Length: 235
Picture 1 (cartoon, rainbow, N blue to C red):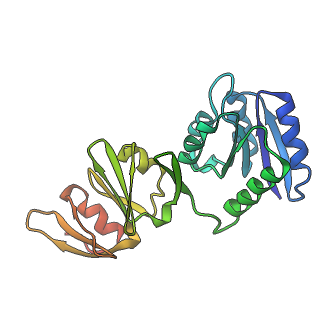
Picture 2: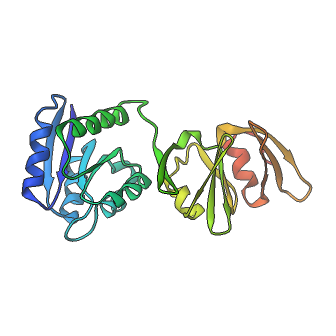
Picture 3: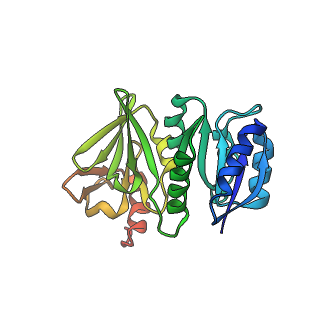
């Protein structure tokens, strides 16, 4: 069984979600909250696998709820919102889905199906939302080869494609799985399983080659940590 919580300041909205959940045989309701502070306490107490969160609440928004939880305590999240501009923010925090109010039973069921995939062992990979001329691309984190800073933009390198984002490297790093990604320079992060070769320089830096041929520099500040992460001798 999947344990779920509902967070919305509108009683009728909570009731609607509750009724929809009753049609999902593998989901049990662990509790409800009407504001952000109560939601944080509810999630910490009940440890649900799934949270259906209103994006805009009286005290603080649904994004802040996740920010106040330890990463290990954050459930898979479906955001409920009356504002379609909230979509990018929802996917930036790795939400399973967002439902634009009023949503149908069929649309709700699709979101729940995606939640099942995320919650299942080895389930759906987290994604990051990239906006380009009004279009939103959802890029799986596992597809990112590396990311680097270019002026006011962040460049996500995915195969031969480069996505430009208005985000700092530190903000991206906070979203990435630290078991899979590592910083190699103050302006560069790589996915570790993409590393193909390292060559030592005399000044302590490393030349790094990724699968696909991209050539990057590992500054000596990060060189030893990277070698240790890759299981290579240091020094």
